[in-house]
Image 1 (spheres, one colour):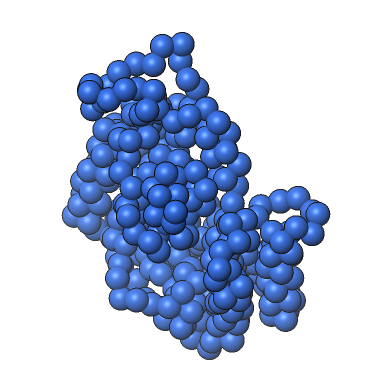
Image 2 (image 1 turned 180 degrees about the vertical axis):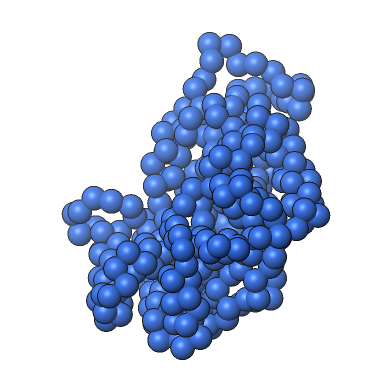
Length: 312
């Protein structure tokens, strides 16, 4: 199985190791003729430690689920990407498309007969599904309205679009492997002028004051590799469309990249330590988070024993 590191996978592992197992390993598990013992399970009956074959099939289907907020985020980024290709199209068209696409996702999830990704809130018939879906749609339309109507963001976007080179929805592939793990990810926008490169990350929510320095550093590292420039020629920043906050750009330097690569190595070492357990289906090596909110928003709550016991 290919070893992959991404911001999404790291976030999932930090949130809940069991969810990380289901997302990255469970659906690909193939039971061997003889189940191997791993050191961690020396005193455990392997029949009780290895994921059941019927659960493997269920996980494969559940991986296709999406939360209402994830769906809203995907639609937002898709439409912003389209705007960069068709800047002359009216904002009303984009807002109408956002509403229609989200409503179609909800309708499909409630069983209108069409195929495609389904919202987990509808699949599990969660008690707060209607409230969550309505809030997700509100945030989507608010973010898109801010993108088009906020004067500072309009000026900011206009300046970016006038750059010498513009890249949208770009893979950050091409970075050196770390301990056999391929570094994967995606940037929203990167623009290049004669003197610098700027990488911008759109956020649907409001600014909360925290900073994912590793994600920003990975973007900066990618830019130095792709464009063959020094770190101090790269600026990375986030724009929060929930409240119109344009964060001050962070200019990269070699020290920041070194710190980022050191933290990346630490994350990868943790993933590496779990990799063999995941491939061999030993789900008990991945502890549950025991956080009600995380379980409530997890697409795998239908197969996770921890969730089942908590709601019994």
